[in-house]
Image (cartoon, rainbow, N blue to C red; front, side, top):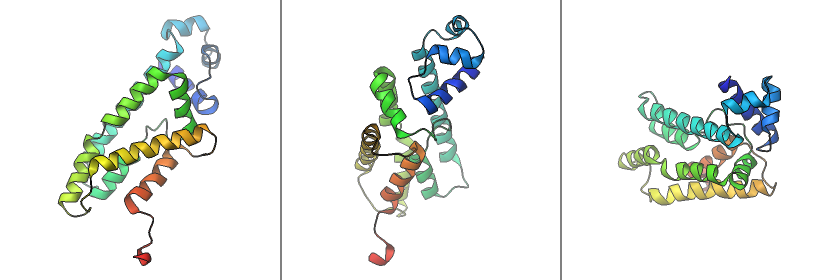
Amino acid sequence: MKERILEIALKEIQYKGFRFTMNDLARQAGISTKTLYVMYTSKVEIIDQLLDQAMDEIRIREEAIIADPNQKLMDKIRQLLILVPSDFQFFHMNRLYELQRYYPEQWQRLDQFVNVQWDGVRQLLQEGIASRKLKSFPIDLFIEMYIGGLYRLLEQSAKQEFHMTLEDALEAMIDIMLGGIMNREGE
């Protein structure tokens, strides 16, 4: 039942954002609010659980991508840079802004994760530079540009000026960061 409640909460976040209530969840789960509060003491506890699951999924998928001997180096790098938890890939960017605005402690946990979860990417970028598949560049600057770009997208989505899913936004950003904007004929 706890898993079902988390699934319902994810759907509520996707459609309504973080403004769902415990009553909404209980009604959709077909249980009383009192029963829901026995399983989860608060909406924040549910959000924490969802964040924990998302971060665990990213760690597991990152390890699998890095260890996959059948993937080319550049494919691995791209996959890591657009890695989004499967339950979050269709979220619009403004959902992350809502998390930042209304749940600052949970946002801080996610922000810390985004800022420190770079060992795998760093390792692959170094491998790419060493093998000359990538030209030499400051990896830390690349990472800061990625994080800065992501956060700028969040700001724009909060102003309702940017309407993309998280996955689509990351894919477009990585296409530009890895491939550049210049056509090959323009060289």
